[in-house]
Length: 128
Image (tube, rainbow, N blue to C red):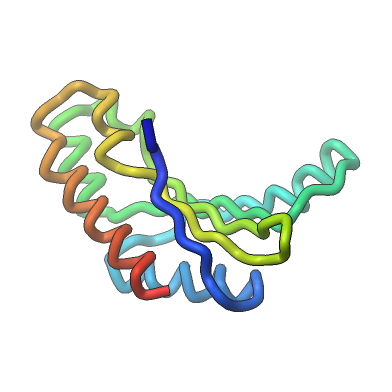
């Protein structure tokens, strides 16, 4: 089962993170958290790791509508978008598939919101 959609993106890592954040904003998503995995592993584990950022993206209206349908939906929020460096120095942006993610709730009332979020993420990736 595929649970992400990914795209290799041209550009330097930090610039791709900025472009991704901007594209998410254009689709109504704010970034609730920005986790620098490389820095965290270095600090907490004294381990080296590739450049890897987890962006916790949230569209407030979709989140509100979803929580109105299923109060437990918060356990699946925010939707994560990752930007990471590949072994050959490229950069990939990967988004969670909201339809797969919300599908675990088994609530058909969330289907239209999941589709909306998935379409927004598709447009984000297309714009990069």
